[in-house]
Image 1 (cartoon, protein in one colour):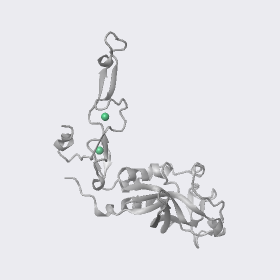
Image 2 (image 1 turned 90 degrees about the vertical axis):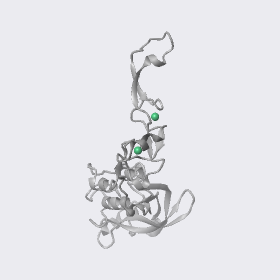
Image 3 (image 1 turned 45 degrees about the horizontal axis):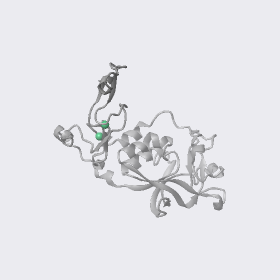
Image 4 (image 1 turned 60 degrees about the horizontal axis):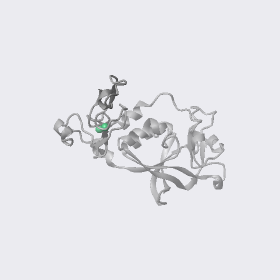
Length: 265
Ligand SMILES: [Zn+2]
Ligand SMILES: [Zn+2]
């Protein structure tokens, strides 16, 4: 039997990301992308905050010297010099939020905490209320940070080039993201049963096999006819690691093979 995903995974919340979790950046690739592939996180659109906030890079004299972004709610600079912050609007489930809370040190080192903010969905200009965002906890405990400039309108490629992440992946975060996942018999990828749809599984419906060149040579052409070429019989793709040509639901190892092959009849 396929295990039933816990009901806590079904509650999605808006999350605004502005730093290393943005698409293509380090913590997206390391963590959020895994959630996205499992259906636990969905990119909605580029977004910008309704209010202005101070955003800085972690100063080099402060350990750990990651140069990561720090978003705050207070700063010595006048509020007119703060910026509406550019970032990305996502929808994430509770497991993903729990995993990202480990990354941000929420309730542990107390470095970051959640605040609900308003952002503008840049594809349709709608205002999204109650959007969770990670803010650095500074007030009363880290006043030196309130003097750091320059204030940034966004964490961009130039800023990210300075980022020095830890060398090791945080396996606790990845284990959390992969809570209650199942391995698919077809594509061998992990999936969440609750988010498994007819479009989730991309796989090749036939095998990756070798054939000699002779088979498709013109009569009389024997050049290299003994060479063996490997490709998927279904679509002719030569790349063994290519994305599948066929789309379906993921199938667990517990499910009957008659279900697995039924749709190719
Ligand atoms: Zn194929
Ligand atoms: Zn699959």
